[in-house]
Structure formats: structure tokens, C-alpha cells
Length: 484
Ligand SMILES: Cc1ncc(COP(=O)(O)O)c(C=O)c1O
Image (cartoon, rainbow, N blue to C red; front, top):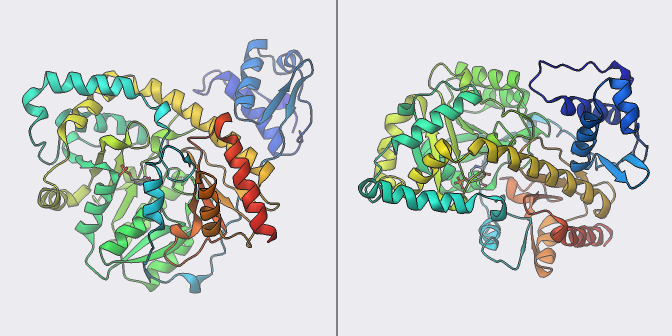
């Protein structure tokens, strides 16, 4: 394929410079341009593609930000060193798909507590870097809203919760293909409460819940606490849960509910393609199995537009869509929500018994931020920032981690899944890294059956020149374990 095949699409939503950047990236992916190769000069490419010099400059700048290209002073742009390969797709051995009673140690609690230690480099928990959050604006809005609504802000926001916030959420979710009314949204205390209410409403002790594998470890903890059993369905790093494996698992197990993080899942960062989202809803719908969909990372796409949710394909009210503003705005505000479909009455009744309702002032503040705080502008900048951090961190992992290490290539969110040679025990790596002031999340936490011992999840949100040395140290420790 030659660069001359480029035809700019002036009607497309993708800016011209990004189209040029995509064209150059494709040539790199296909091996036409190799690591270390010099790419055409700005002037030459602008003539070849018949676009302006500025467009090519912006395209090269965009690729430099993502560490695809490197500028060398007086010499031009070069293709960067190769990033580690993504992990291989899991083998879908059918005999491995059987439900497990979860028993997890205290490691996950330690990792969450690590976030309180300002001395540690935070590569562990999947939290945003507070330095990138709009903290001042949110704090101002919190004060203004409490003064503007003095009675409401000290009163219970009885389920379904603050109307102004539900209205904003329903409006925003149009971008995800949802047709929700504010009455169909229930505000919760974070996405965690939404998930807990969903599982409580759908399952009784002993029931089986299908989850992705690897799976966000708090889901496993929740399943354990509710006395349920987890059925791990393998994921491919690109497309998420294997529907072939799910179909087989559903034929052989009485599954009561299925949890899927469809967009930029935690930990793999994979994005389920549109067709698969539809297929997932249809497959579960035919068997009368509700889907609990977690879309907490949906707004953090590296592309121009956010992906849609599987809920859009649901006509039976059998998808319970859960999310929160913990990854985008403020985890500590504890503002989340659920669109529970036909289970809404049950969810609201459960919430009233267990929690009465969520705190009112932060609901008002987030509603105001969504209405008048420039949320979309803020999202555009934060997405660019995370895209850069994810690209830089994965490239640097390629430099310092043991030979044969593989890293995912997420298209949104801020977590990386790193698969190291089998000799590296990630629990041992966690202990050694802590001694060097670094926290990470070891792979076995993401499985109910002790898989992923040689894997770690790393949070790229805190990656910067300041923390690059810590990553190099982590790589060195992993190399020591690989050769010990
Ligand atoms: C996939 C996923 N769901 C839910 C949560 C918890 O969200 P919240 O802080 O809103 O309860 C997290 C946090 O890491 C997460 O990664």
C-alpha cells in the first residue's frame, strides 16, 4: 500500500490531520515503514497527499504525542521503537469453563489502601490522577449549589435521586445510543453500589454469575460476599468476552446473570465491537438471562467519539446499565447511576433499605458540572492526555521489562495489562515493588481460580517523566524474577 492511496474525506468528522496520522500509522502497522525508518519530510508528504504543510505538521505532532514517531532535531521524524506485542488470545478450552466459589485474600484491600499513601507511585489501583481532574471547578460548584439549594442539599435525595442529575445523564447517554428518560435512571453511591444492587436484585446465594476473565477484582469480591459463584468466560484482548465461550458456558450452566464491561474493560482495556454487543444482548435475551453492563470507562475513548453501549439493543428491559463519574470527575464524590430496565422497582426498594439514598450535595455539583462546566471540552483534553500516557508507558515497558513481555493496546481508559514470562510471579513482584515505593496490581486478583500469576495491571494515569524511573525499576525487578 502506498501513501499515495490517501484520499482525504473532507466531510468526515475525523479532522484531516488525524486522517493523515491514521494513514501513516497504517503504513507502520503493515511494515511498510519500520522502527527506525525516517518518514517522508513534512513538505514532501504535504505535496504527495495534497494537504497543507500545517496539516502534516499537526499529524506528525499527533503521532509524536502517541510515541508512534520521534522527532530528531535537524533531521526529521522517525518511526519509534516497536512496542511490545499484545497478549495472545486465550485458548478457549471448554473444560476450563466451570463456576468457582471465590476466595480472595487481603491483597485487593491492601492495593486500595495503597492509594492513601502519598509516598507510593500509584501504578496499582485504577484511579485517575487527581492533578488532571477539574477539582477547583467542582469544589466551586459544590459550594454554589449548596448555597443555591440550601434545603434540598441537606435533605434526602430519595431514590431515584436528584432529578437535575438524572436529566443530564439521560441527555449524555444519547451519545452512547441510549434512549433513556430521566425517570429510568437511579442515582447510586458510585458504580460499585449500582453493581451490588443489580446482583442483589437478580440473584440468590448459590447462583452462578458469568464474568469476563480476567475480571475487575471487586466484582469477584462482591460475588463472594453475596455467596454467588463466578463463571469465568475468557476475553480476547481486542474484543472482550468470547461469545463462543459464553454460548458454550450457558449451555452447560444455569447462569443467573452476566456482567460485562463492554467499553475499555478493566483490566484489558478491550472494546467490544458493535456487532458483538448486539449479539451478546440477543444471546442472553433468548435465554432470559439479564445483562449487567458496566460502562464506567465509556467516556474515556481515545477516538473522537465515545462508543455505544449494549443496552441500546435491549428491548425487554433485561440490561441493567451501570456507570459513575469516578474515572472522569471525582471518585471521592461517589456519584454513580444505574438504568435498571424492568428491575427498577426492586432496585429502588433495595436501595432504600440498604442506603436510603446517595449524598445530595455531590449529586447537585455533578449535575451542574455536566450542565454548565464544559464537561465535553474537559473530556476531550483528558482523553488526549490518557492516550499519550498509555502509549508512553507501554513503549517504556518494552524497554525495561523482560524479553517476551506483552502489553495490551487499549483504545480508551488508562489501564495496561502486562503479561510477563511465566517465571515472573506477580505477587512476589508486588512485594518487591512496594519496597521500592511502587504499588501495582498482581494478575491473580483478576481471577477466581488463581490464573494470571505472571501478569500485572498497571495504571497509566500517573505515568509521566517523574514516574518513568519507577517503571524502569519495576522492569528491572521483573527481569530479576525472570532470571532467578
Ligand atoms: C470496571 C469498574 N467498575 C466499577 C468500579 C468502581 O467504581 P466506583 O468508584 O464508581 O464505585 C471500578 C473502579 O475501579 C471499575 O474499574
